[in-house]
Image 1 (tube, helix red, strand yellow):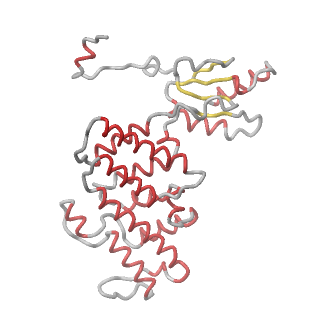
Image 2 (tube, rainbow, N blue to C red):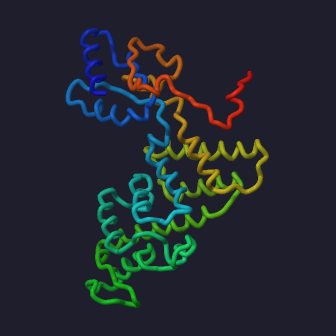
Image 3 (cartoon, rainbow, N blue to C red):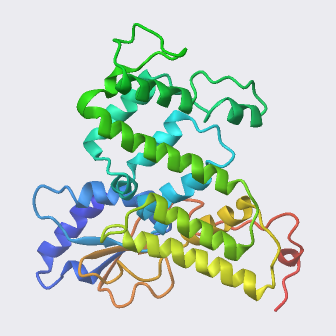
Amino acid sequence: VEVMHAQLLRLCEDDPTLSPADVVVMTPDVEAYAPYVDAVFATADSQRIPYAIADRSPRREQPLVECFLKLLELRDGRLEADRVGELLEAAALRERFGIAEAELPRLHDWIHRAGIRWGRDGEHRQRLGLPAVEEHSWLAGLDRILLGYAMPAGEQRLFGGILPFDAAEGGSAELAGRLLAFVDAVFTTVEELNASRSLSHWRESLNGLLERFFLADHGSEEALNGIRQALDDLARAGERAGLAEAVPLEVVANSLRQRLDMPARVGSFLSGGVTFCAMVPMRSIPFRVVCLLGMNDGEFSRQQRPLGFDLMARQPRP
């Protein structure tokens, strides 16, 4: 990508009439090159070239979409502290619960020092086929944090068998309340996801999940609309197929993941700068300069091996 950047600068020097909008860079794998394109083209010290990356899937381009899919994965999980805390990396989710990015290190420190490791409580662990032990669960750690605010004791004295965690005292109490609200929303969501519903009911439930966890603003509205559109498409597909029976979450999540992995056909194409895009037929029109990246063996031409059980691939017919 650095070589590509240098070559484009040379082309513009050789031909003053050439503008960045006249250049397209095509690659078989946009997702693999996108972070490197951003690293080179967005941080150039001088002679910065405007650019745009097209054909990226919403899941890779929007952190909110990936956060939504991770929420769905919590249903059968152990609710590990790292996985639950990772959800707070999405800005729209933090804004919903009033948590600032600068407060994340303190929250992660509290979770670790309060002894929270995994599991909602002993009952949750028992459902996973493990001993019903409360220690190092979310509820046990949150009890320590709340008790530490209620009665600071220098972490030297037990109360009701609980050792208070004093870090959340004083002005930090409000942040502890926001953490509690977030974790409570996670627990509620996990319980709701442990059911089978019709596709129309899944649409209602998952739209409610979006309202619960994400704050809609100019930075997140596009991603939220993309998820809602995928939910609507899935529900309509069920209606057209006459599917009225209940469907487990695994089927719904897999279908949503596939839909949200599909690149958008509009957006960053022909945006006024150098266009990076996938190798889609006719994409080289109307550009004056066509560049190629990533023409690696096995990626171009793509090797499409049919599945062994695909009988139509053995004897294709019109």
